[in-house]
Length: 150
Image 1 (cartoon, rainbow, N blue to C red):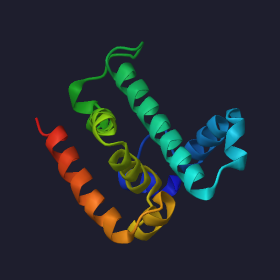
Image 2 (tube, rainbow, N blue to C red):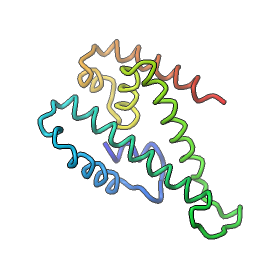
Image 3 (cartoon, rainbow, N blue to C red):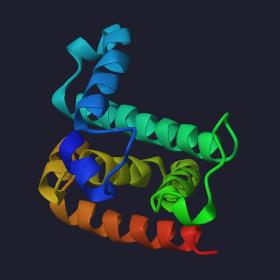
Image 4 (cartoon, helix red, strand yellow):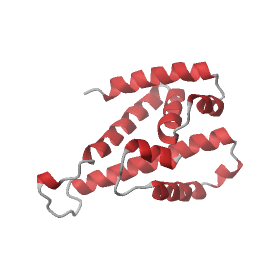
């Protein structure tokens, strides 16, 4: 799951597959209740954990880039991935708004975007039909698209 997530996001200098898996495991280990969870609940929880880790790393990178004790770097040498961190935070904010509007759609987006599950796997994890997942995915993408427009 971590490899799929990071492959879609492009190269991040502070976060790689191993780091994401280790950070996820540390968060999961602190939560004693996950051991008795059903597979679908575990996948949903893992998606939420991975989302929070990616967003936390994006926030940390943005804080460092905005003067968090960093040395002066000429503008032509700034990393080209700086916009990705801001995109992660925008997606997180839009997803949080979607979660307030429709938690089921937000859970589907987490499973598709952060875990990398296919429609059939999402349908199984959410206990819905594949067609319902397809309709919800279209609706969620449209709502997120609107929320991410300037």
